[in-house]
Length: 417
Image (cartoon, rainbow, N blue to C red; front, top):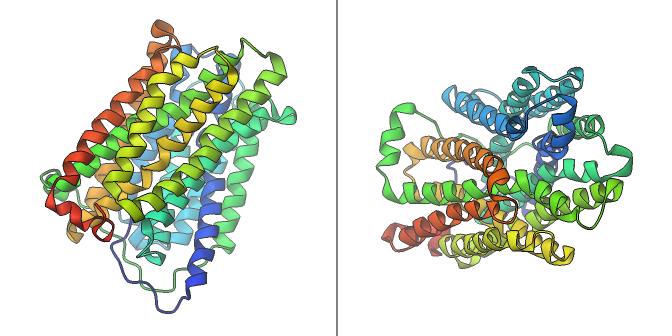
């Protein structure tokens, strides 16, 4: 959630806010590396833990569920208002690291690893949202760009397990899980001892369950939310399944450790590098050209890639990689703009509830799309299954087009609709 304050702190020179941005983003990047740590070694865990293939999507979906539960509990009890943000984010980073490392204690699987994955998600619920709260007051005028950079850090962090999985010395599930946990511990140390405090007063927006009805009746806010929910239908399912798609596709050309290395490296490039650049470009474009325009363009491109990437399955690897890179760039480019739009459209007394509703529903939606792709892939095959993700951008574009046509959209990005 993003706080309501729009006043920069007079005590801090311009350079200090960029220092804060670098350290907050780096700490968040490292902590978020545990999110897809199990997904990066899904098939190894399925074999090691004797799981049915139908359970594989829940290695990620359980994290999503834990994240929603953690975010709702944090908002309900107002933890960001009761506790220092540094302490909250540090606890979240450490909890995510410990719950990931604890997976090594269950070499035979069972139900416990899925509970630990949910604990990881709940821990991360006080990492990313708190990082946004911590950062936003430093950037009242360039918030779209700043939050875009922060989300770029999230994408890089989310992709790190795939890079680890592609390294010759770490091509096993224990190495990837423990490596991700160590990175999260480094993130904890940065939060605890390095990230600077915001030197001004900080009051996060309050969440109230009894205000959800008012949020739902606020049409501009709900259009921004609907845009976000369409975006989320596509985003996390793409991040979850694109490594498996690439692995299956490139089996026609490579095998063994070479295949693992190429799949891991390309997955990191698609999700992490292209995603970081996309988030940066999306934030810049939204502040310059308008939030609705930037989000519609990004969703148009990502939706098109969802439709056509299946056509490249087991075709020339260069073509597959190119489409995947464009998809990775565009699928995240709009992400920061929906929550930022809510801060600009929502009355201050509804802001906390509006942002919490947006995030909670959005992450619940990701569970459905992640599971649906996993369920449909054996029926449709990789050549067609990714097309179902284009439904999200289609809905999102429609919502943002309707928002752009409303007079309230003049409040977006200082008049840039």
